[in-house]
Length: 112
Length: 115
Image 1 (spheres, chains in turn yellow, cyan):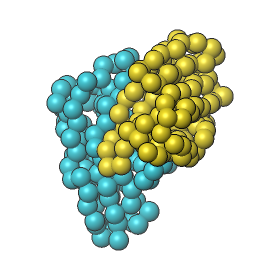
Image 2 (cartoon, chains in turn brown, red):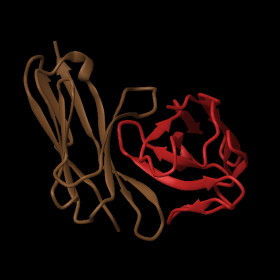
Image 3 (cartoon, helix red, strand yellow):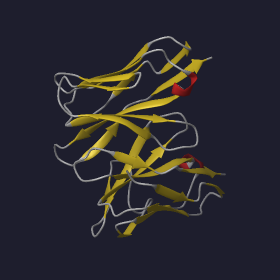
């Protein structure tokens, strides 16, 4: 069974602080996505990384795909209350059936 | 990107009954997915629905309990049959923007409570 473990599970920080969320697996993925979900809504895609070692930046968010394509990280600089939400990583596996596997989730709360 | 709507947005149902959830996309897509999510937790894939073929179900989910229709490239339904309180959850449909793009777009979800 392919699993994507995220850490931490919960995170409560003050506005302006930095944070990193990790997404780890023992499996290799063709690509990995990060989503953010707010209550009452579906997840919204933030970024897709495909190449091992790839780094992408989206304003204050920095995403990295591990060299072996088994792990990823999301770093937020100077967090704001608008960053509050459930962060989910998802890996795409193309060995056998093509499908997405979602991580266990990280619930972030940024306090003003 | 794709805009996805789901109906109903929420429902409260009696045990033993069935509920059909509709998912409508504003563009033609090949792959559609149905997920289940407990509030605040991660997503569990129920099945993948491609137009013109039978849905592919994940381990732990069966067609008799969760029949899926995919009559065309913009629409799908998921039925939760013979419901029990354990079926209370959020049900989400999603589409892939284009095959091989690795970009999923989600509907707002259907919050189901079974009493």
